[in-house]
Amino acid sequence: MFARIAITAFFAVLLALLPGPVRAEGIELAQLATRRADDGLELSFTTRFELGRAAEDALHKGVPLYFVAEASVLRNRWYWRDARVARAERVWRVEWKPLLRQYRVSTGGLHQSFATLDEALTVLRGQSAWRIAEPKDIEDGGGYYLEFSYKLDVTQLPRPMQIGLQSGFALSVEQKRNFASDFTLK
Image (cartoon, rainbow, N blue to C red; front, side, top):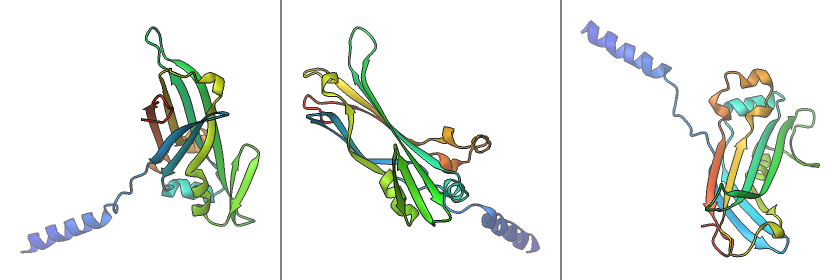
């Protein structure tokens, strides 16, 4: 009888020490589309993600986070490696400004301030009408495909944080899609 109670108590303590449910930490690509416009090829995308606890803690301790979207347009060639005809990259920096009690999102020379982290992340979760190729780069009748990636760039974190990086920073997604003749993604 005593042994049964001891074993039950042991397993109860063991279950209490196990971590709770694990949340999936990644980026889901909800929408990815291209459109041929007068000034070139435009890309629109939408993602879904939440920052992990470690990334959010680092942000609140003054560490800026960088998100990077990369798009490459390649032309199929049967006789050699595929030719890269265009490449575009966008970098967003999100940081917490404790004196203003605001989140700041910067891209290029533009800055926006937000009252909540969710509002700031909404800006980071998608882009529309982003020109990724010039009209001269895309020929009619060619076979093209798009290589797209979006990630939280851990290489721009301070060096000490890169050593033994925690799983809360593992946010990335990659897609490779072929173009149809009218430059919509298949």
